[in-house]
Amino acid sequence: MKAKTVQFPYGKTVPAIGQGTWYMGERSSDIRAEVNALRQGLDAGMTLIDTAEMYADGGAERVVGEAIAGRRDDVFLVSKVYPHNAGGAKAITACEQSLKRLQTDCIDLYLLHWRGSIPLHDTVSAMEKLQKSGKIRRWGVSNLDTDDMQALWKIPGGEQCMTNQVLYHAAARGIEFDLLPWCEEHSVPVMAYCPLAQAGKLRHDVLTSPVMQNIAQERGVSSSQIALAWVIRSGNVIAIPKAVQPQHVKQNAAAMTLDLSQEEIAQINAAFTAPDHKTPLDMV
Image (cartoon, rainbow, N blue to C red; front, side, top):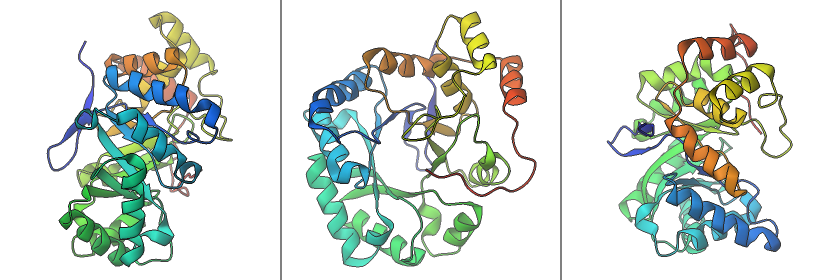
């Protein structure tokens, strides 16, 4: 069965499941396993790797740099800039430092990590300068809600935003009320972080829920694969789970070929209901 993909507005196609790196690079004893996991994921077709200058204070970018050494052309590389660095000379310096840690001369997609005090028009201007200098190919945002996206679209050049990376999983469906429809209407793919509801201190009962486990058992797959297949079901969402254990990397990649039936999706939706009103954007 063909692996699912998502297309960005400028025509670039990426796998519907990539690799997250939050909490990588924090312990030197884990780096070898993390590098190997990312390389295994690349071999399995998860060629989108997402990282950020914030993760382990640059440590995750160093792990990614080591993992992609010698195979940069195989990778769609995403990194994120701190809000307090997302304008003027600070943005240039932050990007250059990320490039050094990543051991590359260009980031495929550079994101504002969340909205801070620097005006969005300053961030757009900085992104445009980074594009013109060849340090980044495209740019996007993360953790912006619908009103933020609307404000961005009113700024000259703001509509060049390629993605919005937000928290999204079966137990956190708030974006479905207005943000996800807005992004779909404006051809902006969503990148879903924490798609398994397990990153950091985040622990929801998604994977252990009876509905996920029952569907997984019937399919002969893991509940995490069912959860990922649910997240990417629309064709406009890219999931970026983090995995270090080889079996988890393998399972994540295999989820790209998993099609849920309408009945299975309905069962999951009934177990994890979406809000029928506007809710604050979930962030961790």
